[in-house]
Image 1 (tube, rainbow, N blue to C red):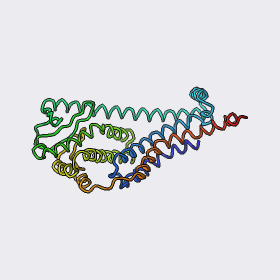
Image 2 (cartoon, rainbow, N blue to C red; image 1 turned 45 degrees about the vertical axis):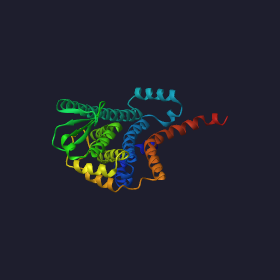
Image 3 (tube, one colour; image 1 turned 30 degrees about the horizontal axis):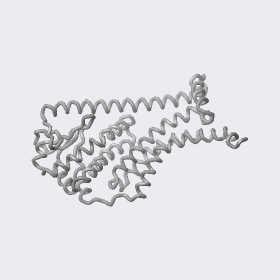
Image 4 (cartoon, one colour; image 1 turned 90 degrees about the vertical axis):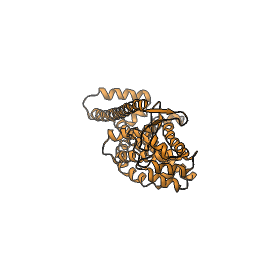
Length: 316
């Protein structure tokens, strides 16, 4: 019961405390990839804890300790049990777990289906109004507004308007398109889809709401860093200034937008990258968030298993 109590308390505390801790992480801009992993691990650990709490309430640790066959036999017995306290607790726990899984799956399907439909309609429009430029490896659209964005998906493509081409040099265009290709290769739209799924599945949870905002910002920083491996940071920054007023479609990932000016400052004044120890500490935190709930859930069963078979291990 102690493990179940910890697993029940953790999501409540983490949903409030973790966004404050991660939101104050000044190092995130120095290592956006690691920061993305931390936010995802934090969100995932909360959902997994809820499921494992239900598991811990439904199945006694002593049963788990007697082996897999005993575990499945106990599950069958508990489900077939009369209206006793154990059966009632088990029923509620399993109902909660089932509801959480069903809710997340339903919202994920809804988010992905809607985004796919919007991208399909936009792709059909681009097929009519745009033209593929093999030199740029992008779709060019005759439009005065300065825009550059990518349309993610299985056949993802970068899109740029003639307004952007007129205002940017060839080197700046190449830098901007490298940013968009980084989004496509990194499949960053799936990161945002996952965050949106959790916000819809569990509305009002501070961790999930802040994660959606932070992940949207961090994937732009990450794409900037990837583009900066091949193009001067100053070149990317000046290109972003030219695209700052552009607004890409909501279902696309654009180079400009509201975050452009903050990203320009970051590109022009790059901070020192995280040291090896800091990265190791961050990676350890990711692992702890991912493995922590499972460890808490498994420890009682492991203890019971060792106690039950201890005499065999000792040769008694």
